[in-house]
Image (cartoon, rainbow, N blue to C red; front, top):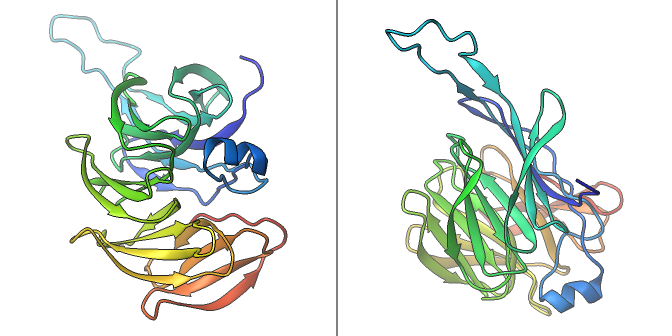
Length: 280
């Protein structure tokens, strides 16, 4: 299969989803980023791992002998391969690549629905979000969202996917039942985002030069509800489980910014070492 450049990863192994706290992402050089009109998370390889168990069990037919291969558990990981324009599907029991799924250039963001049935992949070298059916490991849909889509976030109930439309200067909402765009909210050069536990608010990192900020979105009314100006470019975002704290990494800082969503201000910093990246 050759060398792979990993952008994101999901592990599927059963009927329920567990979140594993791990993210690593690698940026391209600044000149390459400018060429494509976007910015990836700087100089770090990002690995986003989501665990979901899917047990495949075939009930025996009444007139047939018992199937000795029934109830075989399949554990799979979905890994974004940026250079190869593909998603690799791994067998986590054997650590082998089962196969790859072709997607448009630049797989950037990956999210999985809570039931583990679908994986959504944004391609920042194109203008689409691909929909992968995890039962067949095939692309079953392609959603037009505008040029250079960056990160993805999914609501806790799995009903909506939020796309950071870096090239279109908007956050795009996808309904996961119909796999159609159901809303757009203006945001200057959005990069990554995260959705609150109640699904009503999104926090989006805006990378607009001279006006970098965390933009707060009201997902119910599909409008901006506030912003927190930042001195440096926001990269990765994560919320605490109760939604009381927002953690943000910024370019050129060896610390994590801690924001209070209620007061819409930075309340502290956590020293972390060079080029931090986060996921809660």
